[in-house]
Length: 60
Image (cartoon, rainbow, N blue to C red; front, side):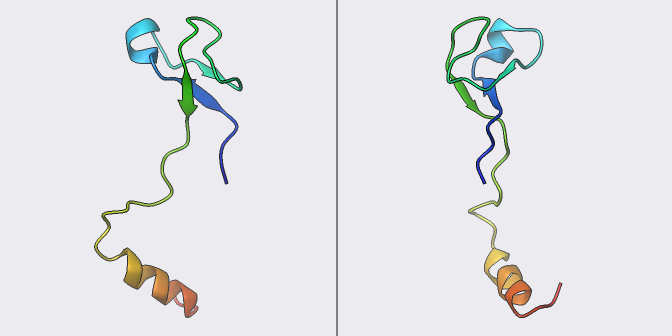
């Protein structure tokens, strides 16, 4: 599920702290915003395939 909350892409350079918004642009500096949620998985995870297979079988 994609998060509706977005963060200013230039907050490290233009602001003292992260600036969050629901729009595509930052309300303070006008820079583009990006999705604030972290990636749900690491595509380079060497054991992810096995972990997901165990989860599908009903084990933790």
